[in-house]
Image (cartoon, rainbow, N blue to C red):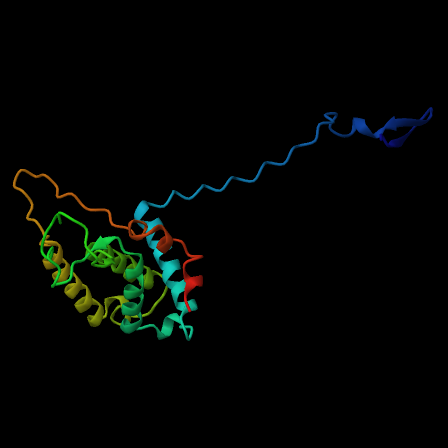
Amino acid sequence: MNFMTTQVSNNGINIIPLDIFTNTNNTTQQPHPPPQATPNPPLSRYENQKRRDWMTFCQYLRNHRPPLSLSLCNGAHVLEFLKYLDQFGKTKVHHQNCPFFGMRDPPAPCPCPLRQAWGSLDALIGRLRAAYEEHGGGKPEANPFGARSVRLFLRDVRDFQSKSRGVSYEKKRKRPNGNKQKIIDVSTAQMNSEVVATTGIYGKMN
């Protein structure tokens, strides 16, 4: 709507449209769109697995009887968690009285139990130890995943599984030709898909 203004002259009163004093361009200035946030780069496979492992462990603490808070968690609780994961293992570990003890490739099946492989447990503890520090768990020496009892447990598992399965876990020296040693990507998903999920498996606990 155009408003009118008046101007007095010698001949009388002239009526002048107001829009001659303003910009004749009727187009309104469009607001600038807000700058789009730069999407975060996708997490690496290691970071994704570390986050799933941490969520799984926290779910384990909540379903513990009695429930445990992270601040009260110690090395003994970490050992309970590792032993709990054994029921989802896929690695055959022969007893000492088994005829296939020490055989790398047994010729026949046996009733020996399935356990978590040492490499899987070692990698899992490494990720959980880093996640604990990232979530403000406190001083590094108070990290339950770095407790001496956990280190000794992993060493015992490594030594026994090495003898039981007839495999060597000794680190290989780098070859002089510069070939890099192949790194085995061990994840909780390789243990069992149920272990990675943070729902469902813990509901079965009594």
